[in-house]
Length: 91
Image (cartoon, rainbow, N blue to C red; front, side, top):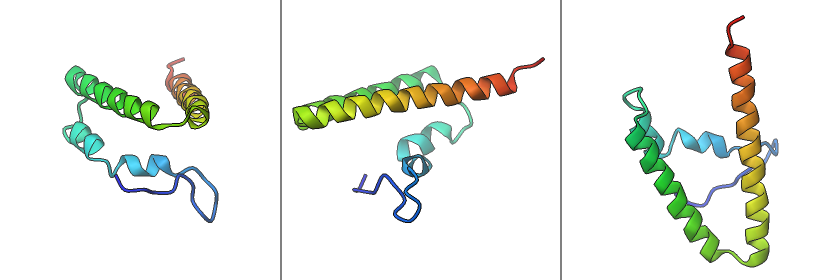
């Protein structure tokens, strides 16, 4: 993937999510409308490999910032999933 901004230059809104639909891994996994255990495991391994590469490449200061950002992004994703789950719950 080429270097791209993380934020929209005009609105300052985070735009990384917009890249998902363009990623080969995403397109390949969702093309049939099913997400298999194998696909999920392969994606997990892909992410782990990239995180290990990043961990080795970052300075201690950059690693600390990235660690906090990844943690906060995970919190955000979890909160969004919980909110969707609550909104779709049957009465």
